[in-house]
Length: 331
Image (cartoon, rainbow, N blue to C red; front, side, top):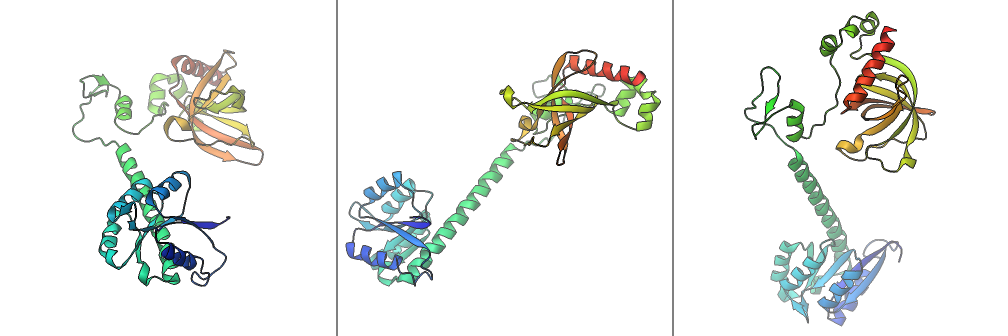
């Protein structure tokens, strides 16, 4: 039945079951006849558990006095089997103390069958479902928060660092690079480039070049037009590679143009947000693949422009890029 609220009634007393069914289908009690109710009736707890193993319901009305189970054991068995559905306990006059104890076992409400009418029953069903959903959402948020806190790695205390090379001594007594230490003790990921001071020290020809100084850029850059292939990090299906055009390149990164039909999406954290770009420099004619992290994405009706920084560039590729930029700037 479309848009129907499925109710599982576990009740061995046929007279009580008929009365509850009439109250459930009483349209005046819940204020509208638009909402449909589908009632499934089981007289034994074992039959109800078998039904739940193969079928989904929205709420369970559970009698505490069944032929095959009584009292809190009934609630515990039902709660162990079905954790994703709110349970409302049905009780007689002599069972109210037990019913109150049942509220401590994830039961959302309890109703005395001798004092329940259609309005009270429908209100209990409605509020029990809402309360149960709110509790589940709260539990989900708490779980996500705990997982996030578990993933946070905090650095504290004294950290041995070399006054000259700035390497750090790890817990095993070995001296390692700062980025290696931070990456293993935090959620940081690194992109590599060269700062202006190091450019002057390592590549003095760049620092003396008036064109570069005039542009006030951190890295030598060049406007180019290289055909390229773009894909996601770790992409195995070559058919999913996207053609692109490299339009600007430097020691720190590049810009590419991709047709507007391409939809760049982050697929998760860490390496999943990286992209691979394959192209060839004019001097080498040898294609190589680099990994990049998108920093800026600009979309228009015709194309998408992505500015990306280089990640873990290999030595050969970096040297080729340096030689190309050096020769182009001195030309």
